[in-house]
Length: 507
Image (cartoon, rainbow, N blue to C red; front, side, top):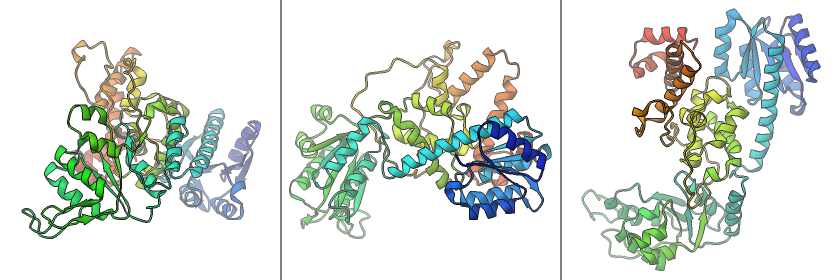
């Protein structure tokens, strides 16, 4: 294992830590100032660099916070522990924004210091293994047998241009599978065009698909090419095909049959060389029986069908996906990637994720913004996840057709996690039974009950403090630290937010 680098101008501190860590079979290397550390980083090969960096804040010849910033530029994944006297505590807390793993207040209890360093080492080693796994499969993630079947199917279809129907629950990443099919097909040099047929009003969908001529309807000032023409030579992905209006299904069937169509208001046939990949979360066979989906179109689309497993059916993929999404969220927000403890990962793995991989992605984005430290602990998880640990889960319903994929794509929008189904968290309040409450209220209710059952008499202060802390942290993250703007968005005064930041130690 690589050594733990200790940076402190106090010889007694270095000596005590060296001896304690050597007793734990943890190699060390000590420095007296930040300049020597930076020089050593340049001269030392990466494979012999530090496993962990433990640095004081105030040293002659440089600041530990400046050292943190420069080290993170060279080694962004290196865990850094900041040692600080009580008077430096505000500076140490602010160091979290620079990516510090944790801070160690002086004078420190030696066993606790060793325990903290050991935890940082374990996290570092675990992250190294996770990074190696992700670098081996950068395009798509999933070690579960069900996902491996999907990957093999994509491989078999790599030289084919046959129509494919992708089925799976909402949030399954069906579009990501379609993109992979396109990328590995002979049409990869052509365009990939996607359209969600359920998201476009019926009156506009025909024009979106097939285009329109000038003057075809009010507002049609110019000729417009539709998605079929835009995808010429490439792939057209029709998402949520089960929601397509019945009359448009007839036009789509004709295009799939002979490759010709007419723009809205047009009189000349247009030909498009397009491979169609369709997707749906619905049972198309049932839709055919109900008379809302054409049977001949179903058979035309159902040449090759790929079924994607739900995330709850491949829980072994949750740790890998979680670490990947945490890295992607951090990159998107321009912050240091957070790590996650084994206990938190275990609870995430037991959660059913009704929103599937998309919901896990949103949870990771939420944790990147809301978790107070660099290591995500069990208590930092969203309320809808924590509530499942506090209450008995309802009897699981039979699992229908499998669903989502774990293809790794970066988040596209900063969203909060999708709420889990309502859980009756507090059976002691029968008047709440059957009520539909937001997930965070359910989590708050469960948390309050847990504290009350412990016999606590400071429940109001504890939960109010936590609520205000999360609320202010979220507002500051949204405004990139601009306090006046955050106060305005929260509807409070500038002096109020300044006072609260001081009271809650959020400097």
